[in-house]
Length: 485
Length: 43
Image 1 (cartoon, each protein chain N blue to C red):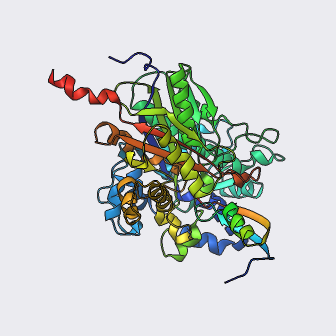
Image 2 (cartoon, chains in turn orange, blue; image 1 turned 45 degrees about the horizontal axis):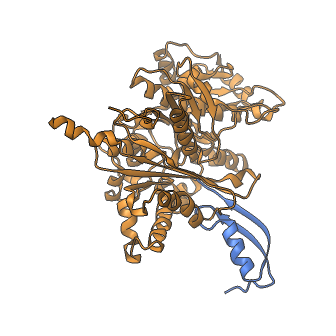
Image 3 (cartoon, chains in turn blue, yellow; image 1 turned 180 degrees about the vertical axis):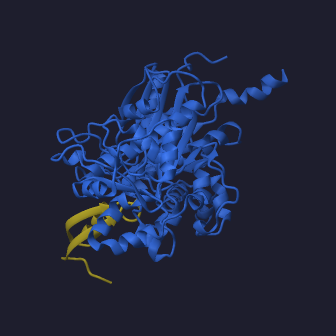
C-alpha cells in the first residue's frame, strides 16, 4: 500500500536516447563550417575522408554504453583509444535507446519539416528514398544538381549522404538571421532527434497520457523579433504523435536537463501533472567540434552522432527510483563558480542537509563527456577532473584519506562515454544505468550533477549548475518480505 | 617564474580547467591588474 501523502512523490521510470549517426552533417557543425570557409575545398575533402561508417560508429564502445548494452564501468577494462576496439556483435538497440542511420534521420527531417523548406537531390540517394518509403512518404520536392547548387549560393544549407549530395534546407526569410538555413537545420535536427527519443519512450509503454513535456536543449528557436522564443518541446511532441500534452522549454545551457528533471518532479509532486517527459534534442552545432585534435591524433572524427533524450517522470509506482526533491539544488548567485565551489554547493551541501556524507552516494553522475573525444583536443578528461574535486572535498570532510582519492573515483565515479552534445552529456547519460542499478541492482543512491556555462552568452560571468538525488524506491525493500508471506 | 606585481594581465580560462574568475583572484592577490577575462567551454 502506498503510504499517505506519497502518491505525488515523483519517480524516474525510464530514459531513452536516440543516437543518430550523421557523418554527412559534420560539415554543418559550427567549427568545421567556419574552418572550411577559411581553408576551402582541401579541408572539406580531408574531413570527408576521416568520417566513420555506420558500422564503426555503432560498434564504438561508448555508443554501446549510451544504448545500455554495456555498463559504463566496462570501459575501464577496454584499452584506449576506444575507437580502435570495436564491440563485436554491436546492437542498434538496447535498454537505454536506439541507434539510427543517416538515411533514417534524414527521412525524419523531411517528416518534421513543418515549414516545407527541405529539398532533396534529384534523384535522392537510394538509401534515403528507401527510408522515406518506409515512412510512407515520397518526401519533399526534388532539385536537380544545378538548382541545388544555386540554392546553396542563395543561402541554403546542404547535407550529404555517403559523400554525395542528399538535399538542402532553404532559409525561411532573406532578412532574418534567426531563420537562416544553418540555424533552421540546427533546430530541425534537435526537434527530430528529441522526437525520435520521445516516440521510442512512448512506444515502450505504459500507455498513459503525457500531461506535459519539458524541453531541455540549448538550441534557439525563434525569429528576428524573438530569437529564443522556444518551446521546441511542443514541436517534438507534435512530431512524436502526441496529443493533449502541454510543453515548456527549460534553459540553462548544459545544466538544462537536470533543471528540467527537478521541475518535472515538482510538477508531479504538486499534482499539476501526473506524467511529465523531459525531452532534449541533439546539438548539430557541436558535430565535429574537436575535429582538429582528432585529425592530429590520427583518429576518425568522433563527433558524428546527434543524441536526443526522453526521460519519463511520473507518480510513485512503488518500484522506480525516487527523485528526492528535498535534495534538489540549484546553483545560487554569489556562491561562486569555480570547480570546488560548484562541487561544494551542488554535491556536499545537499547531502549534508539530509544528514548524508559524500560516501553515502553509490555513484556520482557528472558531465560524462567521452575522453576519446576531449583529450586529443586538449580538454582533458572532464569526468575525471570532476571526480578529483569531489574526492578532494571528501578528504576535506574527513571522509576519505588523501591516498584513497583514486579509489573514490573508481568506486563512486564513472568513465566518460557520452557524445560531446552539451546538455546531453550532463549527468543524464547515466540514467538508464542508474534506473537499472537502483531497481534490479544493488545501488541505493545516485547523485546527478550538472553544470552550465552561462558566461558563454556574455550576459553574466556566472556559471550555473543543478543536482538531485535518485534513490532506491522504499517499496522495493518490501518486495522480498511480501514474496515470502 | 613571472612576477605579476604591477603587470596588466589577460585571463583566459577554461571552465573544466581553471576558470577566469579563479585566475583573476590569483593575479590580483599577486598584485597584478586584470584587464580582460574570458572563460571558454569546449564541451
